[in-house]
Length: 309
Image (tube, rainbow, N blue to C red):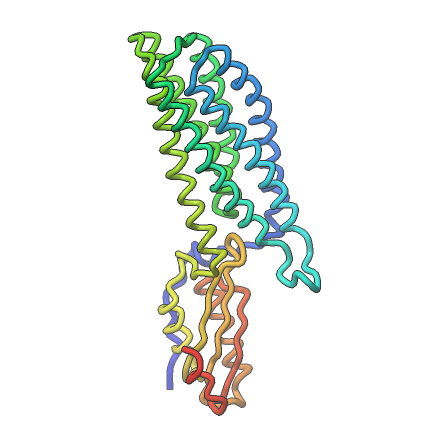
């Protein structure tokens, strides 16, 4: 008979996450950062046209995408807090995943636009007012750092917060790039350095956008979470006393840090099915942080494991 030898508990896995519990603080953080970003966007946009800096304009455009991303993230947080209904039995948790997908796709479009303009500027440089450019870029850097700090406190709780954070971090790098371009042009007079920095900003945007895009696509395709080892969980379930066989095992993510599991479990004694079910639920919750578990107990007579693997 099998004995219960579970893997050692991981303190990080044991951390429970209640999506509804974190909605208020996430919305508050997003609102603060949205206010800071919006207040500076108009200043940076005006400064970009005034100084003729493409690097500053690229950062302003990216900041505009931040405003959209933060606004959509607030909408997603609100939608996710709505209760489930008869036609939406899982509620609206997936709203944040859809918004994160849209944000990452938007970033890719913005980066392509920056590349096109930078290519034109390299062949036809424009004189830039470096001192105002440096002042505006420095203020932008300070605001982005504050926003990044606020969002970083909640990035592990929500994929949408992480998406918004990547937007802000991209802006932070953009501000650093604009400052660098301003200094180089001021000291060396290299006008081509401004569009060169814009190419770099665009590359950083694409890299970060693809990361978020990959995560959201994996969730939408109901792929197994990256931190979950499906085979290890199967072995752990087989070690629970009374379990004979596991089949049709699925693990997927509904929304950030809300993983779900379903499986058919063949037991040795159908009369002990409730004890086996409780042991399985306890093990999966304590060792893997899986709280939403759906398990169908079988006695083997349905031959379900010959249909599903």
